[in-house]
Length: 174
Length: 427
Image (cartoon, rainbow over all chains, first blue to last red; front, side):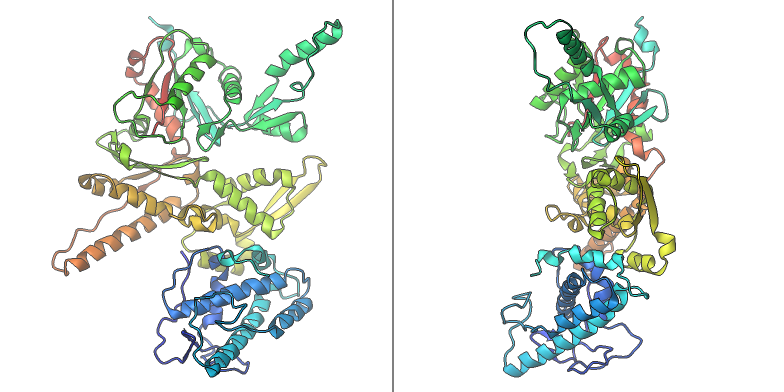
């Protein structure tokens, strides 16, 4: 069974494209609200659940936070694929920065991986808000991913990088 | 007085992965060997020389005759095929069904003459050949084409042209019955290498229409482990990778309660959980070693979440057992839940029965809760007790059943002399 997000209560959180903009323990500038430092946020959840969830091809969505979880799981899969050839932490960081500089599509635009999962943004503002949130959460995820995907001496951790070959939801990454 | 009745009958259980053979009356089989034949193929392609060319022809002819006898089975076969290229491996049984009768015949020859060292004419035989579920044959003798062929082949193999051969259909019930002595109510979950079956038994009779089978079995676990190791880039020579995966499965796999927690445990204490496998390359003799990590618990997880392995089949084993029991007559269900018995090599994973019991209980409890809610909380249903039984002879339970069955005096009286008493799992 897939692992679902525990952030089911989203009454007071601003939503964009049908997805709650959950708080992050982040120092990066962006539209996300700040979360307390010792609790687990959605990025921690995504990384913890990644190695289990990546095996599944069907995901039943129990809350709108699950949509964000799916997006992050897919993003981690892409990131790992970029890290596949990098032998050191420095190379890996460079590859991830390149990934971050690429255009981040929002739902409705060509190139967004899960058409139909999120609602189309109603206005240009909503689209921009969501895009900035995605940028922030992607950067945050990359940072934490690098800390687990590479060991303390800078060599790749094969117990993580093996999952670059897995295809989450059978989606082939270009 | 028939001399054969004074000697113990021979019990052979031919499974997809392993064959268990021994004599009736024993607690465990004498030999458990992989069901594989290594045949010397180098003589097969020799051109037939029609003209007599003296010694040339003679040598070839005698080589051809010897080539027939030049084969090995079981562990020896695996060893020979690794050390030289003249032997080709042949797995006669795939997914519980006999594919290659020639190889099967040779296999039986070696079993009887080399391993058990007995004369087929001096013993009764109790043979188990797991056949793919066709139709549930309740009481009638409408032998399907497959069974007729099996019977005729076996009779041919052992040179028993005379004497009719008979078969009995409720093999599973007998087997299960003798296995637990007082078994007349319960569900047998037989997870072998080629196929998995869930068979409910009530009052000593198999409920044929409720039998369920799933296409996930031990071989799939091995393939999954092989895939995971390959993805990680472990240094295992490709021709050995399946065998290594199989040995890893048998030695190191265990059932976990929760995948994510298990991953965390592996991350926190790698020294405790990560095992090392050392082997030598067959061709060069150079040693290699590889690490074994999360496939230890992801392998057996395939039974509880088949989706992680293949998208063809997604119903977990506890769900299948539950569906099976729900399709049985309503008055038998509580008793069936109370007595779920495991059999087969692939149930030998550590804590398999506990995980199965936990998952099955979850499904059952959810159903009881839902029905309570529907009735408005006025009438509370009695909670259903779920019990998954595991016992030390799980691995060769089928063989054990045959052993006990063949040591009862009725076994001989029902049979005709020199006839093979065939037990087919015609499910």
